[in-house]
Each structure stands twice: as structure tokens, then as C-alpha cells.
Length: 131
Length: 167
Image 1 (tube, each protein chain N blue to C red):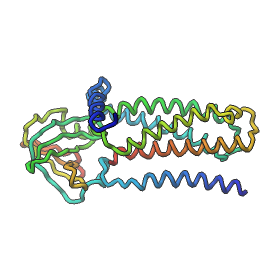
Image 2: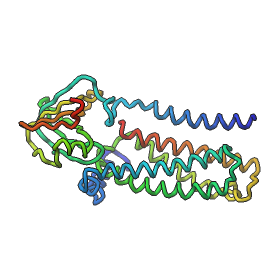
Image 3: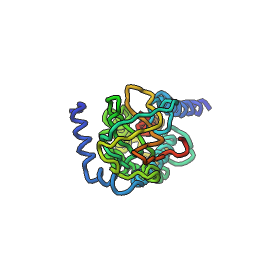
Image 4: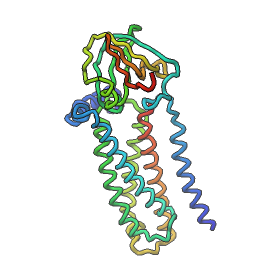
């Protein structure tokens, strides 16, 4: 019985190790989900630096904000962004756009997770159930 | 060698590769499908490794080690291959965004250690003696240590791999 309990300790230790590894890395700056972003609504306007890319875990674009910073505009995952009407590179570099959503919790990072992107009279609701 | 500048250069090159273009341009669903295959690979690898490592640690000793190894090792190998190939695709999609991601810097060494551990286990007398059925106490202890190390390596690889997206 003693050896069994020792074995259990080993297994428990391995489990605890995994859980600690997961928890010690607080997802304060998550790309995924909204936990890494501030609760307050946020909006940034600017001109397109890098056009929309419908690739990877999230569609993205980069805009030069009116505040002078380059903003990483994170959109919905590619299929959902496409459903909202976005196409690869459809908004030309230099166009004026406004991203509405939530700013990254780390305000040293100029990143917005976007719910709604406006380009002229076009509105792309990439997260229509949120905005 | 591993300074920021050369990492960025390598990432740019990977991103510009044929695989990078395929990952970004073939379809809006490509990333999701490759991601799914990656998860299936990781699940096959970790699931089979978990069963075998727990057995090496002495859990479920009623099941003989040799046939258990025969059943789990091929699944683990196939899972690893699938995970490695699809993982390369996921990484090169936007490789430059992962430069400086601390979880990648944990994940890859953990995988390397896990693989080295596989080689060490396979070359050990204790592992070769598994067909004999009755192992000595020393052999059992050695296998338990290597099984525990294996579990720690793969747990770390899976956990840090998942956390790459949360940096």
C-alpha cells in the first residue's frame, strides 16, 4: 500500500506541475478571447499601413493611427471576417479607416481587438453579436 | 546566433516560403483545418505517451509492459509526425509575429528534451528487458524515472504550446 501511495504522489506531482504551468502564465495579453483586452469600448482612426490579411488565427491589418502610432488591428478569425465582407487586401494602403473595439490591456502595445471596422460608408461588423 | 536580428531574418524567410504562401493564400479555412490536424496530432501523441508513462511509473501494472508499448508507441510516433508537420505550417503563416514569444522558447527545448528522453529510454537495458515481463526493482525504478521525465517534458510542451496564443 505504501508504494501505491508513493506512485500516487508522483502522478499528483505531474498533474500539479501541469496546472501550475498553465496558471503561472496568466493570459493577461491574450490574442484569443477578450480577457487580454480592456473592458471599455475603444476607437482608433487612421490610415491603412498594411492591408487586411485573412490569414492565421485572426485576420489582421496595421493602421497608422491619428495619434502617430502604428496600430495592430486584430479582426475576427478569417472565415468570420470574410463573412463580414472583408477580402484580402481590399482596403488600399493609405485609406482612412476607423476600428471600434477593445484596446489591449498592455497600453504599451498599440493593439485593438476590433468588433467593427468602418471604411468610408462601409461597415464591417466582424463580431456582430458584440457591437 | 540566436540574436533578435537573425531570428527576425529567419522568420521572414520562413514566412516567404512556399508553405507560408500556401497557409495564407489557399483559403480562409486553411489555418483552421491545419490547426485541427495539429490538435489531433498532439492528442494522439500525448494520449498514448500518458498511458505508457503512467505504466512506467507503476500505474496499471496488471497490464504487461511489452504489449502496451507495442500499442502506444506507434500511435505516439504518428501523432508526433502529424503535429510536427502541421505545426511547421502554423508557425510559418505569420512567423515574424512569434519572434520573442517566450512560450515558444519553452516549447521547443521541452520537445527536444522529450525526444532525447525517447532515445535514452530505447537504448536502456531496462527498456530492452521489457519483453521478459518480470523486471528487477532497479530496472523498474529506472523506467519510472524516465517515464516521469517524459511526462514532464510533454506536459510542458503541450502547456507552453497552447499558451503561445496568449502572449
